[in-house]
Image (cartoon, rainbow, N blue to C red):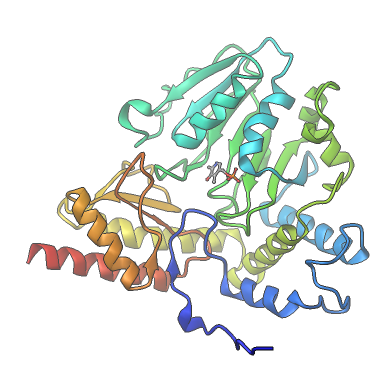
Length: 373
Ligand SMILES: *Cc1c(COP(=O)(O)O)cnc(C)c1O
């Protein structure tokens, strides 16, 4: 057998990927330590039965840690599903809209919201309450710009549009309608007032762990809307009734989500502290854009800029290509923006350390200086 030795931290680059994304080093180290045998169990988490007492403990601790972090009250259930956030684009309207005469209202603030509404149209009546496409999703609606339908089945928003880099700072007022939120790219990055929501869903692989598990937080009264003709596995009630285990869950993904929750609680100090840290990191980069005299131009308008995905353009595409190439050579990787926006996207989720952000800042300053010399 070859001894590969430990991968030294020096080999890790700063990963600005939009997702799957950077994980806290402490979480990776813990997972590595426990990979061959969970303490006191003697079996890897990759091998244990999802019905074993060891996994009972992992699942129940992860659920309860998540509930405590977010302050989820008794009115809401929390379940872990598979199929990613994308499956929720369908499950939400299947469970909350199918068979109803009212429309579901969508506030479309970017690519993910546009993808969600497409799936909802298959299930029932849909109403576009606002759509920011005209300005390529660089802004959010002002109060008064959202036009709700009459007693909508629910109102769907995307708290952070990962591709365009626009983020709600506060929930819109939707009256009595249940507010449904795709929180995939800012879940656990800041506190959230769960009581204001009918349903929250988030895949884990941006801020909260690895691909394979999606958290759904649903107000209990909304479970009564699901119809009996739904496929069993697409009915929220199945997952609630069976405690997230109607079939084999993504055991390892749930385990990593649990490690991330513990990291936020014990190392970061909770979600207030997490949010302060994230805001501080984002400010470092937005300050560079604002002081660049137009060399770097942000995509999102000030006021709705995301703390998670910082999107910006350089003077032309050739310069952007060189920027990305030079960054990669310095160990600042995956900065190329999505093709629908172009330019650069720096995703600076929870686990991106401040050192990664300041390394990017220094590179941006040097790059501009060299170009304008
Ligand atoms: C990544 C992402 C998705 C898609 O998640 P999958 O788990 O790949 O289906 C949906 N919505 C938002 C806001 C995202 O950032």
